[in-house]
Length: 262
Ligand code: MLT
Image 1 (cartoon, rainbow, N blue to C red):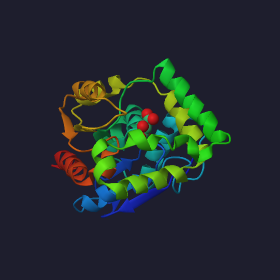
Image 2 (cartoon, rainbow, N blue to C red; image 1 turned 90 degrees about the horizontal axis):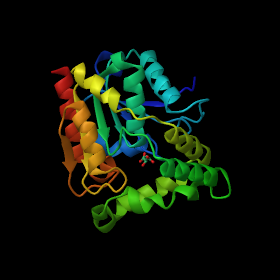
Image 3 (tube, helix red, strand yellow; image 1 turned 45 degrees about the horizontal axis):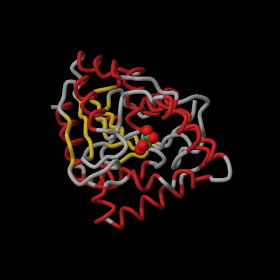
Image 4 (tube, helix red, strand yellow; image 1 turned 45 degrees about the vertical axis):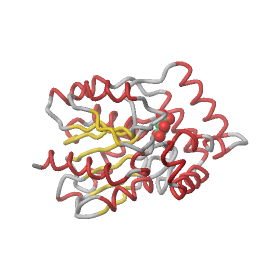
C-alpha cells in the first residue's frame, strides 16, 4: 500500500470530524491553501495524490487503491469519520472512497467534477496524454490545460492566479501525470454511490464554478439529483473554484461540516 502524504491543519484530526481535501489533476494539496486560510478553525487533512506533492510513490493500481490508502492513512491518525471534499480528480477519488469505505463518510463535497465514466473519445485522449507525459513531452503534456482549467474571469482579472497555476502545471511529475490519466480513464460511473449516500442521509454538497469549462452544469445537476441536494454555483469561477474563489468555497465547506457535526 502506498504511504500518502497527509498534511494536517488546525485542531487534532483524530479528536473531531476532519475536513479531508482531495485535489484536482495534475496539482497537489497546495491547491487548497487559499481555502484552508479562509476556513474557520476546523481540523483539516489535505492529501497529496500518489506521485504528486510529497506522496512520491505510485501505487500498483488506480483510484480505488488511492482511496483505500486515504482511508488507511486516516485510520492511522485515529480518524474514523470525516467530511470528504474532492475537486475534479479529487471528486472521483472521494466517490471511490464513499463506495469502498461508506462508514468513513460523514459528509461528501463534490466540486467541479462528475460521477460518470469517460466515453471512448475521453479515454483515448487521456491515454494519449499519459503517453506524451511518459515520452519526450514530460510535464509539457499538461501545459495546454491552463486555457481551460481556469475561468474567463480569472484569465482576465487574476494574473497572479494564472501564473501560479501555470507554475503548478509545469511542476507536475510526468510519471504521476501518466498514472493519474490511466487511472481516471478506468474509473466507472458512480451515481449509484450518491444514491446510496442519499438513502443513508449523509449530508452532501455539489459545487461548481459557473465558468467551469471542464465539468458541465448537466454533470453537476445529475450528481445533485442523485445526492438529493441543489447545486451551489460560484460566480466568476472556473474549474479550479477552490483556487479562483476560495472564500465562497471555504464557506460552503464549513457549512457542510457544520451540518454534519450539528
Ligand atoms: C482535474 O481537474 O482533476 C481534471 O480536470 C480531472 C479530469 O481530467 O477529468
